[in-house]
Structure formats: structure tokens, C-alpha cells
Length: 506
Image: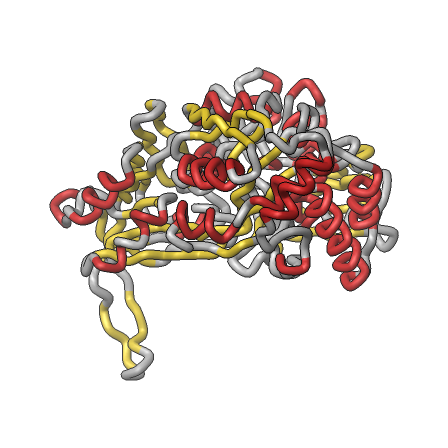
């Protein structure tokens, strides 16, 4: 493997702490990390991307004001510090004075203001817009200070700002209209080239304010077959891989030269119903579908049991035991009665959409669900789509049912307000809202007492599971596989690959 890498020698002196004496260090070698994944990005605009494959790439290039660490704690991103006013209606950030975009320009308060104005502009189509509707105005008293003036106290807005969808982009690129055609961020890596569905070449951003980067760059190969990725790992052609398929990931520990990182994630596998379409507009039909599905069987069959049955809230601080939620124990007799009560004793036909590769379990999940719903007379036709076609269809809400993998968050409001509030910008995807959901979301947004917030969102979770616009299935794991000489990668429950900034090859 050594002959493959372009390397540079860095000399230094270290203390041999155990011996209490100074020794000359062995040369430390930096290298280009050879990486592979099975799904390529679908676009380069950080404010518009929903596909995990796009987010994983852009998190290496762009930065938000703040981040979530591996313990879901908020830590600095572009901002060094932040503070709410006593009344909760002002949020002030101090920016890292060393932060620079990859074009050499400093990151200033003007860039932050322009970025959030772009997110809030309805014409942008920013997917996280609903998270920031409490922003009444933005002040920039100096180049390194940003003050968000809020129309009301907004506890979860800080968590929402940790998302790639809230990344800070150059004001100059917004003005030029080049966001999405070029990728110029302030993150640890620059995008040097992108051949869609083939490869990305990234180089280390030497001016990154986050500190030294452990590799010279990352060459990413897009290999749609994850068994081919595993074969390339085995032969040493690849150093690091993002794996989505548990069937492949579970083979990695059997390889003596490889190591597997396996992390529970906040994202969730879900069957989304479209309650704007008959007969899913009837509560009894939606509840019948919920009662007819054996969530554990879906997980065991499609994902080899690699996961955990979940309710709507996947973050540990707020999650309810699924056993306490409506019909999480399969009850076919109850499902049949609900169907009969709704006037569909003989069932009906519908189509479920699924994407190829994201997740790789989607088709298998759809097949298990198809078999289970057949028992109550629902004839389900499965339509598998390429990811970019699926995303476009999904965003338009143009489906009867959809097997989906949706992102999670450390806070319930920032996770779900875009779907389940009256001002949510992804209502077309959810196609359902009621006064109870909207009211509970708003209460949870302004409540500052942790115990009261937990009670509010427990009520939200119980209600949404009962009205069943979606059927939550399970949370899975995030997997990365690497050669044993690749060290320092720290995963997070969000699935971010940002930890690659601190990876080194020994």
C-alpha cells in the first residue's frame, strides 16, 4: 500500500511519557485517503439537499455556525461562542476570526446574514426554512458578530443551526447565483472535481480554521455495488468506505485487515402514507395499516435485525418506549376490523415507491410490507426509482406510500416542524396536519423547562403514532469500514463524515 500514496515527511520531537525521556519521532506520513461509497451526491447546494449522499459530501466542504459532536452536544463550527438573551429573543454569535472560505475570503457576519436570508427566501426552496421562521431580523454590528433577533423564544433554533442545511455560504456567491454550481465553503476540504456517479476529488483546505487536517485529500470512488466496495477493501485498493447495506457491513469483522465502525443513528426507516389520497384520508385505514405491520419482522428480514424498532422520536433524551404507542404489537384482527369499519373489508390497491440504494434495504422493506398488508386485502404495487427521481417525486408528495429513510435531529422540533406544523415547508411530503400536532410543536418550541418539554413531545409522539400518517419502522446503524492503518475517525449519531478531517494513515 505504501507505494500507492504520495507522501510527505514531517519531522518532530515527542516525549516518551512512559520512559520520561525525549526521543526523535519516526517520520509521520500524510497521504490521500482512497474512499468509496455506493450513492453519489445529487446536487451541490447545501440549503436544498435532502439525499444523505449529498449531505455526506457537502459536510466536508461547508460549515454551519455550530455542530453536534458524538454525544449530541452543541460545539463550535464557524462560531466560537453563542449566547441567548435573558428573554430568549436574541441569539448572538461570535465568529472565529480565522475562518476563511476556500477562495481565500474571510467568513464574516455579512456572509452569515446573506446565508440565512437565502434560506428564509421562499423562492430558494431551502429544505430547513421552517426551522428559522422565528428570525425577525439579523444584525451585524461588526465583521465577527451576528445577532439573530427572534419574534419569540425559540429553544430548538440552535440545534437547527447545526445542520448542513444551515451552512454558511459566501455572500458573493449568492449574489453571483453560483450556489449549487460551485462548492465554496469554509470546511476542511475543497472540492477539486466531481464526475457525477463516478468520482469526487477533494484536497485538504490548508487554511481551515479547525486546525490541521490529517490527510492531503480524499479521492472518492462511486461503486454502486457494496460487495465491490468490500472486495476493493480486501485487496487494499480502498482505505475507507461508507457502507449502507447491513448485509455487507456484517461481513467486515471477518476480514483480518479491516475494521468496522458501527454507530446507532438518529435517522429512521419509515413507511410514509399520503393522507391526502383516498382511502388513506380515513383514520381507520391508516390505523389498520399500522396494526397490520410487524415492524420487527421488517427490520429482521430487510436489515438482518441490525437496528431497533422505533417510534417517531429517535433521540435518546425524548424517545418513548415503542411498546407504549398505538398498535406497535401487530394485530391483524384489529386491522381487518378497522378496514371493514372504513368500508374496505375487501381491501384496495395502492403503489409504494422506493429508491435504489438509499437505503439499500428499501426494496426488501417494501416487499415485506407488501406481504404483510396483503393479509388485510391491500394489494401493494412496488415502484423502484433511481435516487434522484425518487427525491423529486418524494418532495412533490406524488405517491400513495413511500418507503423512506429520513434524517433525525437531537431536538424533536427541528426534526419534525417542517412536516407537521402549519408553516412547515415540507407539508407536501407529509400531506397531513392537525391542530393538535401544530399546537404541541409550538408549545415545545418555546418551552425552556426540560421536563416540561419532554412531556410535551411525549404527547406529540403518542398522538402522531395514533393518527398514523406515517408508520415508523426502525432505526439502524451507520457503518464505515477502513483499513486498520486508518486511524482517528470519530462517528456521530447524525451519520456525519466530518470526522474525516482528523483521520490519518499510519
